[in-house]
Image (cartoon, rainbow over all chains, first blue to last red; front, side, top):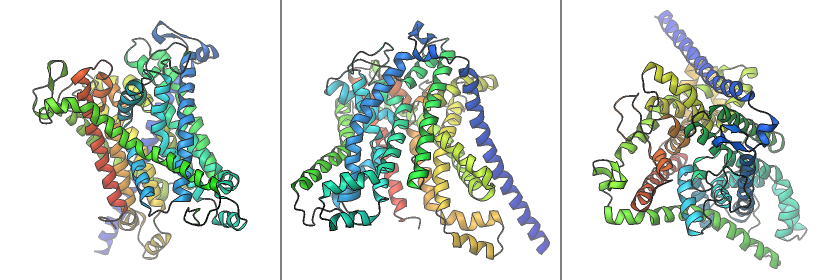
Length: 287
Length: 292
């Protein structure tokens, strides 16, 4: 009786181990397959000329120079708008409101919903608000502003973490010295909370650079070199989408662009997790 | 926690200015959601007013140019793809978190966790592209045409797996050490400990992970647009092409005008409603009202 029970238990343990290990193996294998495929097909296309040249023949030939410039400009607009608003909100939530206050709770709740909004809905909103109502049209400015709305929750959450990690002694000492809140904030808290801010920034950049759906109807498809922020500009992710879906024979350059995008993102996310572990001594999970 | 709260005496006028600036920033950040909903409603209102809600479900087909607005095939598409991928990704993701915590030696666990984090950062358009050039031909060889519900489910599964894996990982990390020591003292073997002690203790974290991944599965656009074939129909088998709500917006927004455009904003509203319901559910769980 005891023997059969034990054998039963052993069998179950063995089955569980097998399942767990095979799940891990499956995940690893899929990931390696994906990465290897992109590396294998993309690496041969990449060169300095590819990174700087103009796209020709709808992107089938030539490079991605203007696309990288547009991506950078969209990113610049996005950060220029989202960083002041995001840091301000994070400071207010972490330093000037209690968890129980109504304003704080409402803001937090609305940010929770915002972080779950599908990117295509951001695209609809950006198209209706920035492009139509504000009259910015299909432009880098519209795209950047739409992305700014999108990255705000990530930016705010990790900046807030940064502020909460600052020891209370800093604030007490500052108050005992009779420093104003403003001085305390700019000279003590902000430098001390810097790592959190930086992590949020890097994560936000990662999210913004990976985005496609929110940009199709806001920043547009034009693959010329943008001359101003009111020009339409094609982001790297849209370039990949367009080459693979709408341009037959664009796969080779799509692979190369995908490789550029993946390498950029791996670098960005690697930086973020390195910063978080070495400076904040905590892992920030944003999903 | 010491708050630099405004109700303590502050003699500095700059402080008051600062506080108002911060409040302004927070008000903008908080108002974005309201702004989004307001614009969706505003743009959707014309068609809702003279077509009505019911016709989005009872019309014979989705032919906006001819005035037919049936959204149900797209709703089914979204629902099937979401359910399929969540059903596969949840056990895989939870098992992979269990692997990290209780099965893998530390030398393996660290790089494995890093790998999942990398997987979480890869953009959806890259997943979609890979699905389009690798997965779709593969499925097409087994059972034509290739772009299908199955392709969508597989790609979505790969995409949402890191979400549940990372959330489950965080949930398992929060299980108190003494629970595990207690189980060890009772002589429980590994899987029995995980099933009987760890899972019940980490339940709310796991449920939050499932809700988050469901949200991602509903909202995903690009990857699913690239591999699903985008035929407006209610699928009858795994190999039928489908079109989801999100893909429908992305495909038709470029040329939609008038009522057609408004109808797309209605589907945006539907998506927002689904996400709001999920956030509410997550909130409910994290407050321990149903699972302690």
